[in-house]
Image (cartoon, rainbow, N blue to C red):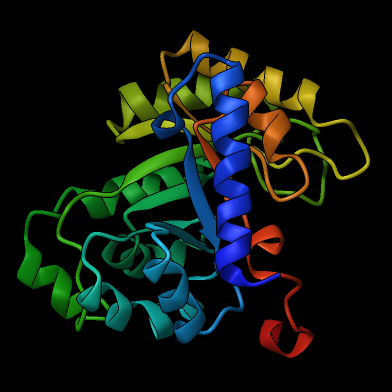
Length: 242
């Protein structure tokens, strides 16, 4: 399937599923998970109207995205992979949204950096990617480990309320929503329902849930952002992941 055909198929699926929930298509964001994709492939997707992308690694994004963002300033870039505390400065400079706020140490590092975020010239000097600097303050999603899987990042559900409260009220971070990655061997719907319940308790409107294999279910459960990679770009070549 060509990229154009894949984009059209996914858009129609999103539209149909959203309408079945009496929602507008605009209420669900298609995020193209572009890990391992070349700049040329990303440009092709942009030409087809895709406007939101997600990268898993700060380093890979820093190599591809400054030039792309300079050419396409209306395109938004999300971090959807784990963020190390020593990469916080670069992540804030590069990404419009960070979806993987998942632990107190990272929350504290982000809050510390954001205190001086208005000093654009200082941040340009400190960032390792000064050729592109995102002067606006990114927004954040908190990642919840709904399956309580030890190998996965994310706040455990039992700790979610306290962590969200600390991030929003204590640290004053611009948290707008929640994100999860359900266990691969379990039905995703209960995990999506749990995430939505936690979000509702805190008045968080954005829900990043659903990937290539389950984004229809996620939309039916209230997702506002679906992270689609394989269904859009096809299987990644192994060498691109090295």
